[in-house]
Amino acid sequence: MDGVRPNAITDGAMNGSEAARLAALAGYRILDTPRERDFDDVAALASEICGTPIAVVNLIADGRQFFKAEVGLGVRETPLETSFCAKAILEEDFLVVPDATQDARFRGNPLVTGEPGLRFYAGALLKTQDGHAIGTVCVLDVVPHELTGLQERTLRVLARQVMKQLELRRAVEERDRAQAQQRVLNEELSHRLKNTLSLVQALATQTLKGVAERDAVAAFERRLFALSKAHDVLLQEDWTAAPISTVVGGVLSLHDDASRIEASGPEVDLGPKATLSLSMILHEMATNAAKYGALSDEAGRVSLSWTVEPGDDGPVLAVTWDERGGPPVTQPQRRGFGSRLIRTGLTGSGGVDLRYNPEGLHAEFRAPLSMVRSS
Image (cartoon, one colour):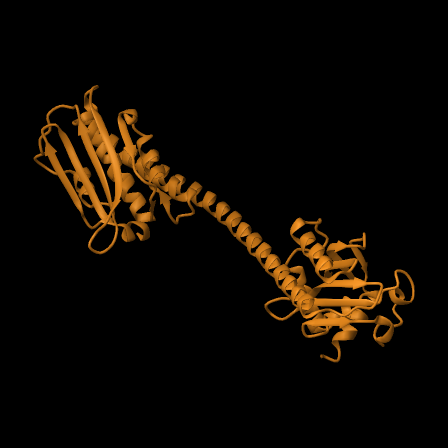
C-alpha cells in the first residue's frame, strides 16, 4: 500500500495518485445524480444476501462520500472523516471488519463510539480499468459479523456489475456527444454543399443562357437536383449507409409521375458511392420514361423492384425497372450522357442489362452486395 495515499484521502492532501483517482471518478459523471433503480437494486440485494440492515453503493469524492444507492441510512452524503470506505479503497480488492471495536483503525470512529454504534463492515472495491479505486459496494451492521464465502463473492460480483454499469453509461454519453458533434458537422456540410450546388447551377444558367437546346440545359439542372437529393439522404445517415427505400423515395419525389412508379423490395443499406449511382440512374430512368417510355402515356406504369439473390461469390443486389402500357419501344440510335450514366451500373463497373421489348423497357442492374454496401 502506498505510504502517502492514506493521507491523500483521509487528510485531503492532493498528490498525483489522488488527483488521478478523483479525475477518474469525475469522468463517470455520477456524483450528485438522482437515485436510479439499477443501483438501488444492487444495494437492496447486498443487504438481503449479507443479512445486514445497511448497504451502500458508495463513491469516495474529495472530502465526502456520495451514496449513489443506500439501504438503512436515509442520507445521500456524509463527510469523509468518519468513512469506513475511505480506508477500504486503500485495500487491494476487499475489506472486512468483523468487529470495529477490536480494530485499531476504527475503534475510535464516532460512528462506532456513538450513534449508530457500527460494529461490522465489509466492502468490495469499485475499480476502474486503470486500477483507480473510486468507491465500494459495502454492507454494515451494529453487531459483529462474519461473511460466508458466498456473501463475499456476491459483494465482489455486485461491485463488478456496478462498474460495468458505469462504463456503459459513460460509453453511451460519449456516443451521444459524438453523434451531436456529427450532426452539427453534417448540417454545416449540407449548408456548404447546397451553396456549392446553387453556385454551380447559377454558373451553368449564365454560361448556358445562349444555348439553343433548352432541353439539354433543363436536363442538366434536373440532374443537379437529383444529385442534391442524394447528398441530402447521405447527410441524414452520417455519410455511412443509406437505406435503399429512402434513396428511391428521395429521387422519385422529384418526378411528377412518381405515383405511377410502384417500388418494392427488402431494406438494404447502400454505401455512399452506390447511393449516388442509384440516385442518378433512377433519375435518368424516370426522366426517359416520362419523355419516351411508359410514363409518356397516361395508361403507362413502371414497376421498380429490388431483391438480394445468391451469387457465385456471395449475395447480389438486383434492381429491376419494368415499363408497361406505354408506346412501343425501340432502341435509341445514339447514346447520350444519360444512357452512358445508366450503363455504369450501381458501382460504376457495369452489370447492366437493358432490353427494349415492344411492350416496354426492361432494365436490370446487378452488383455484389458487399460492393454496394462498401462503395
